[in-house]
Structures are given as C-alpha cells and as structure tokens.
Image (cartoon, rainbow over all chains, first blue to last red; front, side, top):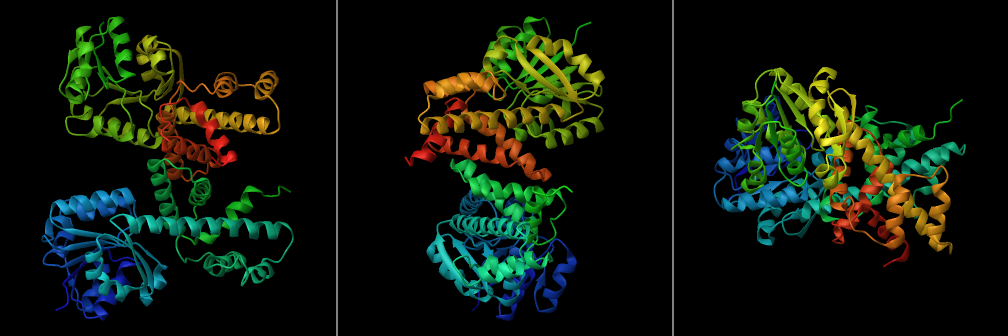
Length: 294
Length: 293
C-alpha cells in the first residue's frame, strides 16, 4: 500500500513535483494559497484542501514547497498549519531553500509532537521539476530518508542523504555559493571580454570544454552572450538564497568574502528592477559599474 | 508644567540614560524585561511598571533602549505593548539601533493611532550614557524634535536633527559604514607596512598629517600598534550594527561591497571567540589572512 501524501505549495516548482507523484500512483491531498493552482492537480486526481492542516490530515508523508523561511514556519507551525493536522508518526518534508538554523528548530518542534522531519532542498529549476530530474539534498534520520526515498525518486535523479536535520539546507547553501560565485566570475569575464573589444560568443566557445567549463558557463554564459535574460531562474530567488548563506555565516562566525560580494551584486540587481529576470543579468551590473562615460 | 516620561529597556545603556532623566527632575515610569533591572531606578524615585503598555499609559514621552529590531517591534506592537497604552498626542522615542526600514513602518503605524515617533539612535557607549555625553542622530518631525530636545540634552551633548522618520537610523548606519571601512583600511595599511619592513607606528605618524587622517587612525590605529584590544566598542556590538546595515541594504536592493567584506571579517572574529575585544582587533583577521595561521 502506497503512503498517503500531502503536498503544500503548488507554484512553479510544487505543481510539477506534485504531478510527478500523482503520475507514479500516489494519492495526494493538496493545498495552495491560490485556488487556481490546485485545479490541474484536482483534474489529475488530487483532493483539494482548504488549509495546510487539512492537507496534512491522515497523511504519511507531507511535502512543503514554499518560498521563504517565514513561509515554511507559517505553513508548518502556524495556525491551521501542518502541525495541527498531521498525526504522530507522519513525516514532514520541506523541499524549499530556507535557513539551516530555522530548519533545525522546525524539526525539533515537530519532534515534540511525534512528527518526523526531513529537509530536502532541490536544484534543477522548473525544467528539472517537470522532467523529474531534480537534484535533492537531504537532511534527517537515515531510516526516515529510506522511507521517503521512493517518493524522491519520482521527483529527482541525483538524490543524496547528506546528514542530520539541516544538512540538506547546508548542502544547498554550498550549491548556491559555488554556482553564484561562478556566475560572478562569468559576469566579470564577459564584461572584461567586451570591454577589451572581443566577441563574447567566441570567448564562450573558447572557454567551453576547457578548465573553465561548468554548467553555469554552458547555460547562463550563453544568456549573457545573447543578452537574453528570460528566466531560467528569477534573480530574486538567488538573491533570497544567497542572503540565507550570509545569515548562517554571521551565526557561525566565519568570513565568506566572495559570497558577501556576490550578495551585494544581487542587491544591486534587485535595486535596478531585475528581480523577475534571469540571474545572468549580473553581467550588466558589472558593466554598469565600469561604464564608460562619453 | 511637568512632563511624564516612560522609559523601557534598562540595560547597560538604558539604565544610566533613565537615571540622567530622573536626576533632571522628570517623573519616570519604567519597564525592564528583567525585574531586577528596575531596582536602581525605583531606588532613585521611578515608578516600576509591569509592561510597556503600563509605562506608556501615563507618559507624554516614552523612550526605549532595547537590543534589536524585533525587540522594538515587540515593545511597540506586541501584547501589552506601547501601542495599547499610549494616548493620542503622546510621543515615542526609539533610541535603540535598528533597521531604518522597520522604523519608517513603525512610525507610520503609530501615526495611524495619533502617536508621534522619533528615532534617535546614539553613539558614545556606556561611558557616554553615564556622563550624559552621548551623540544623538534624530529622525522625525521638527516640531516633535523640539518638544523632546530638552530631554535629549539630559542624555547627550551632540544632538543633530537629521531628517524625517528613519533618518536617525540611516545616519547611524552611515556612521557604521564609514567607521567600519576606515578601521579596515587602517588594518590593511599596517599589515602592508609590516610586510614591507616599515614600522607601522611611523606610518601612522606620517598619515596623521594628511588626507588619511581620521579619529580611527588616531585611536584604533594606536590600539592596533600595541595589540591592545580592550574595548572601546566591542566586536560583538559592531557585528550586530553592521548586520542591520547589510540586512537593510539587502531589503532595499543596495550594493555595499566594502561593508559586506568588513562584516565577514567581524564574523571571523566572533568565530574565533573574540567578540568581547575592541573592533581594532580586525587587524588580526588581516594578519591571519596573510600569515596562514
């Protein structure tokens, strides 16, 4: 008998992830803040609920896919939240990208109510969510990970159990640090190339396949060359993610100079209204800094 | 005509500030989260209250001196908070160092209930508070500033009205940005000097006469030379203030690359257990960066 599943948060990521679970035979109770978001899932066989509490009722595993730390706290621990509806022994799996410290606190609070928790943030964007090829980085008890792994396999390909509660969020933070500092490098390189009078498409070609090769060069570098900033991933999400890393460094007491600088670049990007476009726009922030005044 | 005064937050800064108001003859209604914190004030004649609401109820002007943005929000908007007790026409003065964005929002909320607000963050530390010699940067309406000015004068020496609500906090943030980057600059310069075989003491002397001169080169520079990091202004508090600056910058979409870097260096000092040292201890982070220890 397949576990009964609740799914809360039906946006760009949540909707296709929930769909993949339904396609694999799971029966779903769903809740999304916007009623229209629930419609396609109801058509596919899910039960629409009026709150996170309702969606959690009777479920063995409850997924949340909402945006900020505060959203997760509200949806899981708030009034009419998951904690009000979930039965002891149920498992709550948060797949958003939020603060590691808050994640551990939420897990502790749920444990008091006899509810298990995993943090399982993802990488791979909307495309990965639709095609079920997300990378999933999981924190929590090994036996709980094992029980949820079959469900993860419906949504992702590279699924790694990293460590205890919070470890998934830390791994995701590492992912964002590597990716976004690489993005900074790309932005500076292409701005430098252009300022030197080069064709950035040729530079892109030269860098591909060599030591500077990366997925970020491949995908976001191309957008920089073409100056095509259709998301992709909206810059406001990276802007949110990278501040989480800095908040954690503040608490841990460690210096992350590169991360701190890239966060400022994202601040500037948001400040100039680029939040809803792809993060490859970062190249224009670098170009703006050194603008030749004629 | 007697003005009734409320004072909330009776810690290292709040206690001496409240005492200075009592010494000048103002009747005070006080509230501190820890009951013991009220004792020295009731001994001096203040009325102890059970909540911020109670302290604000009789007061014409209510001051706060608490730790952080969430604390101010709690004191004003929380259960038994100032908003529940203050009368229309009353004035609320936040002297804590918090986010300018939150400040503007709180001022608007209070205005809906007919309550005026000033933000008046301070600098000068415990010594300044005790001696009534703090520097105040004030934001809010001019006519409200004028009404509170005589009370400010009991707590501080340099009192500047910088602009509308939030301007005081923004100015305090600017103070932190300039001070932080200057300390960083001096730390890097001295490290550079040493590596070049030059006595940083001589460098400091030479620089004092020119464009690189600053109070920080004078004071923090000397502490760096002597490796004497007795505070002063503690790393822990500096990290907190700069965190507020960086969170505000993030919220508002403002890039502050230099400040962001200095914030990381302060993180490193906290991580190595040096939060109680003076900010001039920053030089150690640069030294460690360059010596691989």
